[in-house]
Length: 401
Image (cartoon, helix red, strand yellow):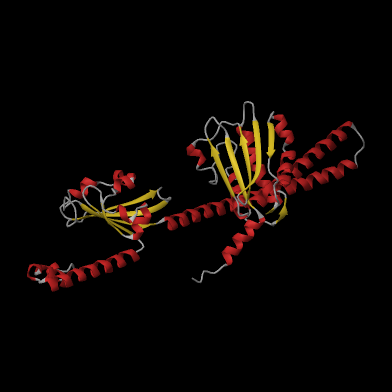
């Protein structure tokens, strides 16, 4: 039940304000100041942002959380216009609908993404204030902003984790189903080979032996692919050792040399800095380089050029791989690390997801910049050993302040 304003102590005093003498008036002013300080203290402890605006969107009041969420300083209160500070807000709410509502119960609730002063997700609730300080007493609004960034990010990470887990289970099942018939084929090829050795020498025997040898090698190759695939998708923790990341990169380039030559890919490398050792798992990082380089090769058609840069910068080793392909659209760029997503007809949509997971588990990062018609740049960032130690030390420190 809403209390009757006339029954509140402060309202009773204000109702007799014209009868107060100088002493009692001074006491009243002091009491009002204390009431204001108390309300400020209460509102500033609230985790939600609270704003009060007038009919023109001028912010008449804001608590500390409200100021932080929209990048407002205290000296801007009374002059800053909310619609200018958060332009998208004006277009997503029906201001006139609230103004024309006679019941006072009109409430707007929206989910917003704020990009300034930093990227945040907020839930907005907006209600009219019919006794607001402003030019038009009926058109003021109370705006409540609840920061849902942590909740949204946690939800997105959970969804991504569930997607990854489902892919890993699917991949393991497919690999298992493929492994069984391949084992059976291997056994029968071995039996054929033994029986063939007992047969007399003939041209047919030589041809059959050659065919069996080819089939055996192909089965062995398929088993190797399945093994590497399972090692890639399983969430195994990296076996971190001191390693030279450039050596690993060059090994992958050497393995892919024939394929690049067949596609006439011109490769240039620039290791301008002395690249220090890092902590990493060579086998897992090979998988990252394989995926990135393979994508780059498949993206280039006419006059393919691949440029690779490596440098040490700001406590990190940075490797950039630039291709001269057709580039990636903005719509596709944001989905590249999503499972099952691929811009290639024959793509599985898990290569970049695996690369991102491996880089994260190494304490690093993978970023992609691209523009249609201008090629793509993949940036791999690895923390230096001393940086990794410093990060671990910071994580283990307790804040006792």
